[in-house]
Length: 110
Picture 1 (cartoon, rainbow, N blue to C red):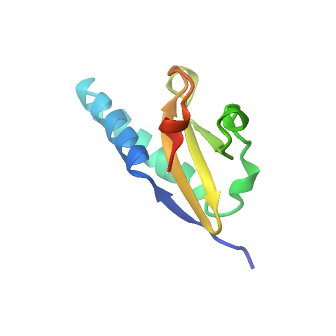
Picture 2: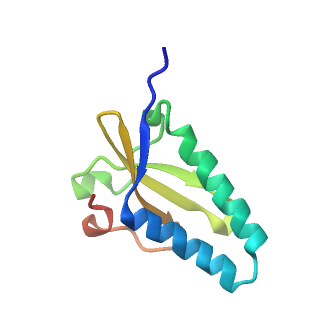
Picture 3: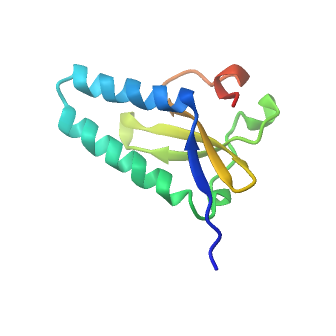
């Protein structure tokens, strides 16, 4: 029997996704935005089984939190899906573009 995890997006992660989609809309690239959202949902769904396969994020130790990451995208459009595992739930804390500065503890707080 495969154990399944529930996937929950925090308000911050939802806002991050909205901001990405707004950027696509501003660029008049809604087809690409729709594709990005579809890819995001597919990547999130992979976390339903074995989210521990994803590496611990580089800044995790410095922040005193076990934050894991799953990458989404290619080339300059790579986002880090930063998440915590609590019991049988995966909390997506942030959707963080790799070009941004390193997230702080406040950025990653549940």
